[in-house]
Image (tube, rainbow, N blue to C red; front, side, top):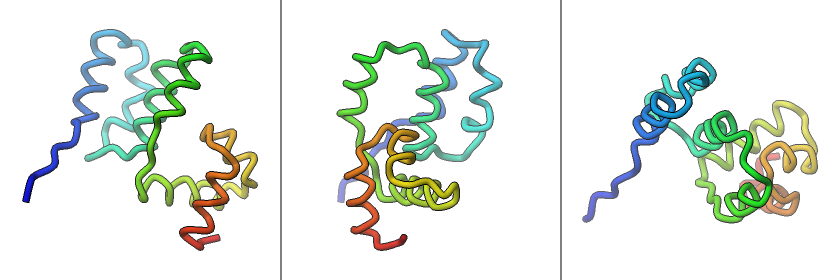
Length: 110
């Protein structure tokens, strides 16, 4: 059985912040202090660090995102906790309303 290696996002983002964005270190500290980062944590770090990315690049990046089950459940939980409808949650996470509806149907949570 092969061992799967995952990127050490904490190390990657810590180094990136120290080298290029030291002024944003305090904003990222709470996320980077975790033992491991979820997909949503990585997305939040991206938002903090690269807020000024052009819309064209943002659309490209969105088209190539993938979400694991844990991230999907976090998104659905966030939506429920904050009483957001599919449109509001989709805008917040930059997803399709149909994607959220499909996830709800698959996980039958809400």
